[in-house]
Image: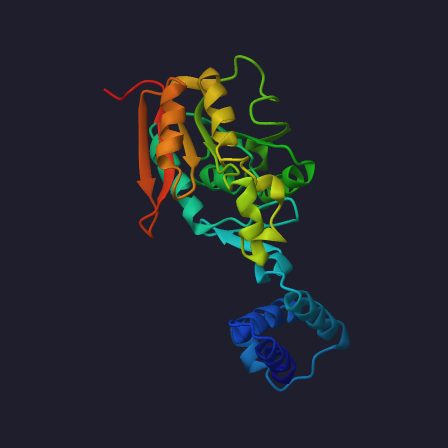
Amino acid sequence: MGAAWRAIRDLFRRAGIDTAELDARLFAEAAFGMDRLELVNRERELVPAEQLKVLEGYAARRLKGEPVVRILGEKEFWGLSFRLNAATLVPRPETELLVERGLEIIGPLDGARILDLGTGTGCIPIALLTEYSDVTAVAVDLSAEALEMARFNANRHGVGDRFTTLKGSWFDPIEPGARFDLITSNPPYIETAEIATLMPEVREHDPRLALDGGADGLAAYRAIAAEAGLFLKPEGALLLEIGASQAGAVHDILVGAGFAEVEIARDLAGLDRMITARLVAAP
């Protein structure tokens, strides 16, 4: 087994892949169905032909530029493993900011209701649901394929009975009169013209629907801000992930839509990454 995965490592090195050893080892662990320690302990064993074929298939995809996480189809977020498909973004550590802030907001509430827009894998509402047993969530996405994956992830983590999915654009599938304590979204915020300049791993493998924020990258924020007040409870909150250079523009959009309290938070890299907004300022 050791010889098999090291041969893939050497192939990756010749191809100029910086993370050749890590990638090869992760593929071997997945293809052989074992963890790192077992891979070491079974170093001298021969690899069954079927498992070797899986490993070689992973390697071929990686050599074409596909990211490791896409090939393996799993990504950890908030200590939970989320399954991916072609219609979902890969959950990023920065997005955990929305979960942290969301927990602060819904913590004091009984039976809080969450609405997540453009849910993808469902990582934000599912992470929140795993922390409280009386919270419910509605997840909206334009992609039926993404919603299928979100439901899978919700069931996988034992919160499927409190997790509802709706297909549509932003608030369109939400019943008039529905009210939520918390509305969350990591919307598309890349300017259309900028997508062509993104790294190939993103440009060629992430769903464009989840990337393209329109000509100025702000189309989703305008759409969400225009209607969010209709679906928030009086003291409810809106949490939005933002691009690092968008804080001022999104702040102005929200204030223009009637939000009285708008706060910007930075990620661990010191970049503007999240906006919290309320219709009524806190006393």
